Length: 343
Image (cartoon, rainbow, N blue to C red; front, top):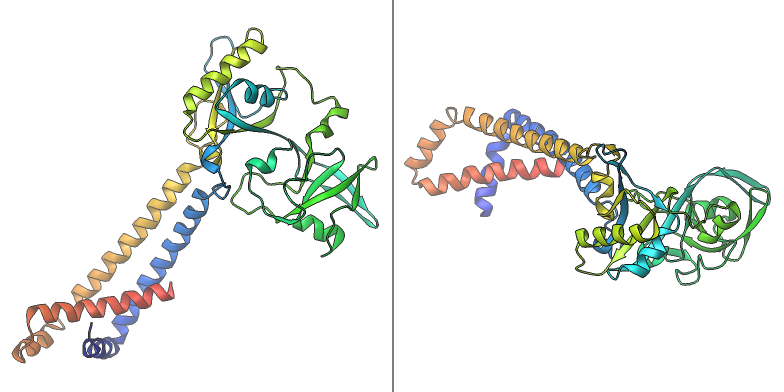
């Protein structure tokens, strides 16, 4: 693309500025629409892929059977299951239980608010999930009773910009919890939407941390060895459960944690999940781009009869077929480049 070709291309585009503006406007609007949709698709596909070992992280799920009917799929597990599975299944190198809570009253000085987004977790939480710390570190948290990890947003709400590690918040006018760490606010592309993390022993006084295999109300996540086969781990988890639970009629399986946002399903029948919207918006984005390209080509073709005289004069002056092709491609490239910038 020589300076002479660029100069001539700009001169021609400026001369036919009305058609040029229509071409650029149509293409830029179409590209902008497609980019918005593809950025949304990219965001949806990025869920929980920022964790260091996300390919090894799985959630344990269940197929429950009632009187021989089709399976009823749930995403919760017994309280006691996680540590047992870790001990009995060699492919599981770590486990973490998560019990979601909400509606706790937090009091710190004059600050008094009801807080949602409370999750009770095992001390292995930060061994599995990657959330950067602003204050404190992942090795010293969630190991002592009556301690908690809070998000940066909650820290600012109660303590301003100061380091809150070591300071206390009264929970439900009853228990005094010490802040042991502050993490950066969880990104939008995670299913783990929380404000506060309590250690697992917080459940003991509430009689919820029991040894019953018949209570399904928590999420259990496991970290598998690199290269472990999902189906084999699922079979082993079910076999281990058969030992500890009489007349077990539940099949257990592991689902990739990074796929939960788009592929999770619940109840009777296996629905496709939110991935269907990704397919729809991807198809719409490609369709919009296709229409934009067709429109661009149609406008260019419509100008061909007008520019026939120009082509004839250029050929008389010695222009070759390849030179004319390069000249027209230069004009198209300039319009496309400007459209992309505007988009």
